[in-house]
Length: 462
Image (cartoon, rainbow, N blue to C red; front, side, top):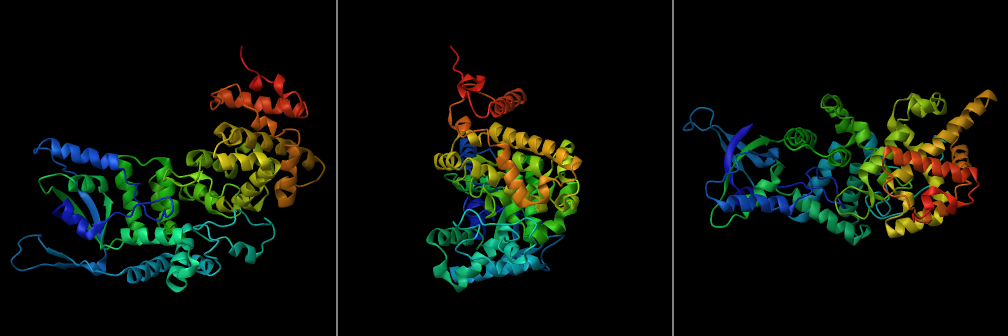
């Protein structure tokens, strides 16, 4: 580590911030908040004695920094020389692409060869593809990229070799990202202090800086987590987004033990990003990561939903105890079942689902609705599995087509009107409220979808 001081404006001449944005989440930094930066500016403007003593943490590319120990500098002092190249966009694009490729695992590198950049998960494209869970068809599997960064790498390659294939909105997203990482230095911690100090009028605010030379991106992400989680803890959403979009699979494998030592499950952290980007997912592009994108289902809601499925409670064990995707221990292996399960729900309520997506709101997408509906169907499946076992038949999870048809059967007597008719009981996102909602669903099913108006959920209070 090297300790130095730098005025805020001068620091920004050679360092920038790798912010995450809705259309390009590879940056690991929190989304920039003008309010937080303005608060720093106002504080420093209020009195000349006000200071910001906390160190800004910065890393600098190894090829852009020279460290000299000169004879006339005593003790541990050294001279740091940081070179800022005026690289044009095309040169920087190639540099970033090569860095991305170097970070990928072998399987990720292989997967990018099969990605159609016009229909990748980073670009607007089809919302789903057909998949057979048990097919083992490598050609089908290759259509699903290994990681978000693998998709971005393929897209950067296309921007270099076939720029006309990249839609204008994606070209702009790439340009913005390249601009944010084109300077030799990247600010790991302290972006709001730097930008707030830069805007102080009448004086140059000097900040203490700790410089870490030539940190790999994986180390930057890890230290960003440690620094921010100890000072102002990252929200679970920020943590999951950072891990799933800023690291390759290989980098996560390398850091796995360290993340677990810090109390994080890296595999679970990637779940919501995968259900938002995987073309098999009925929730593709519907998840709101808090970055201003088009998604509307809150990430924390989606996380609870998918986690309760891929890590089912023990009462559902007969459903999955001999299913390879569960015995393997890999949460990724279980995601296709989640996609099949919820795709069947989407198909059962196709008009209601489509209207709610168009409106970006609807009772079917309430947190309580989705959690209760998933639990109700799993309860139905466990009863069916117990009967099947007595008859020598396998669990519905043994076959993808069977799973879809059984989910549809479970919902045959729960009509669309249940979700399109306004609920009169409010604030059901509580333990008691979800229990009530589940009982109302079951009552409607028992009545074969009839007499909705007589149910407590729909009765207007006098």
